[in-house]
Image (cartoon, rainbow, N blue to C red; front, side):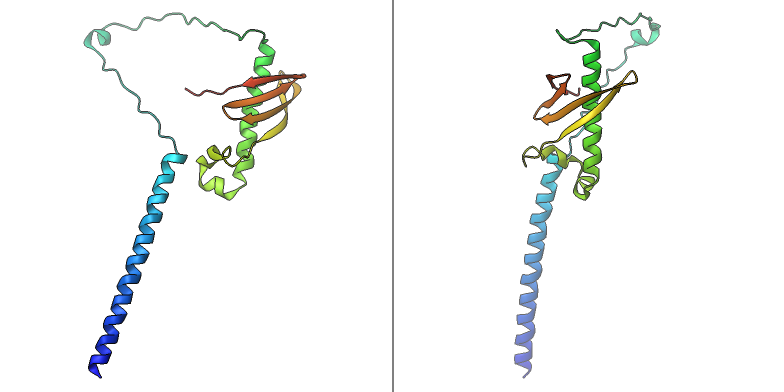
Length: 163
């Protein structure tokens, strides 16, 4: 009688140990997968390298130089077109952010919108851009590496590079 009870207790302990081991192995695999998501969705800021200040530089007063601003326009674009394209891209990015904020997954994982291209999801919008108090209608479409902006019957390819 005691031997059969002891056998059943040992069998139960064996099953418990196997079950706990399986659960911890599965949880470890899930933790590894979740840790792998972090580098995919979040970009780390590059550390700023500080230049050590030498004694000579510290003793000299800073010389004020007049700022020289030189505006270089791409060939064939007027300042009005550049301002409309810039405002259209910024307005589109705000539109996209507001649309994605309504979806819970994108609120919880803000970097998730970076893989929408893989899923074949593209955003398009018809916006009215106000430049100097005058509204100008534009159509904008997101493509890999930039945007296509349609304004006054012309199509412009706009790239956005953040440095």
